[in-house]
Picture 1: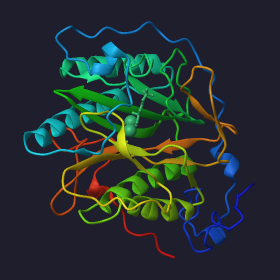
Picture 2: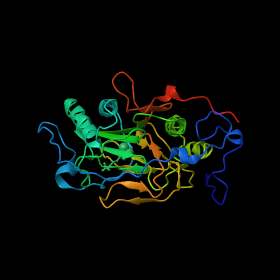
Picture 3: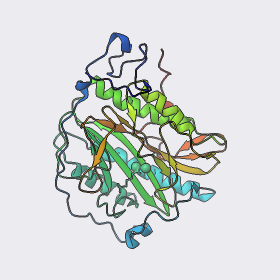
Picture 4: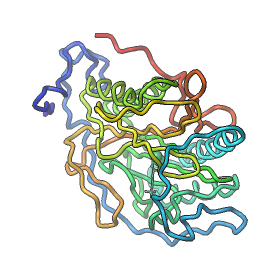
Length: 339
Ligand code: MF3
Ligand code: CO
Ligand code: CO
């Protein structure tokens, strides 16, 4: 049993906080065994050949010219472009629903990629990750101790695997980016608790956005929330401006930071996508140049939405045409945990 505590005692659970293990008991009466969360280290499998996209589907420029990372200015979406962003956001949300519905023990992440790929194409959209910086698949699949950017491959999903599916769609000049984490087969209270805490942290971060508020509110809301459950939030990766550019400024920290003031204005569009860790903070990129493995292989979870600042609050753009998302919506925010 370990309950890591940093030099400032940041990760020490309040004794009255709900225990991280999902027992529903106060931490002081529980202290479950964190090894209950452990999952096998994911070995990287075979990556299948690149899937084709019909010629009539328009690609983002970087697919042809290989250049990403230029023009990172914050994305402010106005007029008819807001509807374009809604449309592509709805497509991304639907791809995430379609791909996650296929999750089953024995199915490979490559098969999930194929289902996602077909869903983008059926909806007339391009999978933004396909050909982005030499990424060759249509989604990211990050299993167990893989924190993010896992490449779909031949590895069959195992009972109890924790998998994040990250979808980015491109249509009519705009990108929409969303992800959610799922359990395959048999779940457990500690894993459910990790996933639900990550979802709540994401939705709470979103709900804090409004015009006039500062970008740093997101980390101010998310980090204390996740620390109270004994998890950590990744600092090396954050959310990003998104719109006509896939990855733009600002960088959205999910932890508490002092950084230059960036104030939200109507139309600003960005992602919120915290990754929660159950083990130590260290992680290492695999030789494929993408997959980020937690060094101790302890599972992580992530949720992501693309959001736009409105005149009086915030709108989640990555919900399907009937308002659904596998990542949840603001109505799913639960009561404040009591202490
Ligand atoms: N969708 C990821 C994000 O949330 C980015 C994936 S880029 C890839 O920003 F190349 F790894 F696919
Ligand atoms: Co993103
Ligand atoms: Co994403």
